[in-house]
Length: 112
Image (cartoon, rainbow, N blue to C red):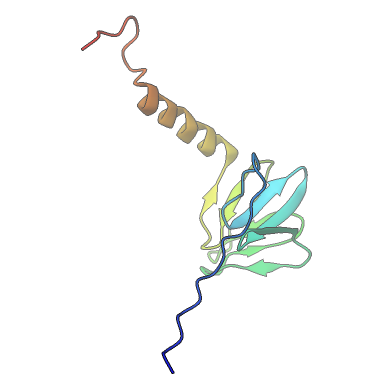
């Protein structure tokens, strides 16, 4: 008998126009939501991340050093423990826009 071919996994269907969030923990509409492998669910019990950071269902983050902070609307914590605030995301988005549109130079653009 010939050897069997390896099965390739089917891509997950995504509804058109729906953006999927990267894996991590996010405060959304006052609730702490966890996204893992494309599935988002509310956080119901304390969660420990790879680097030792702990997140409670109320949105309190405790780092391994013992520093505690509170998640606010739009803040994201990756599953590796990196915290990105909504202000940081806004700054990144504006920098990407400047780079994309080349808005450094005001006024008319020269045609090449």
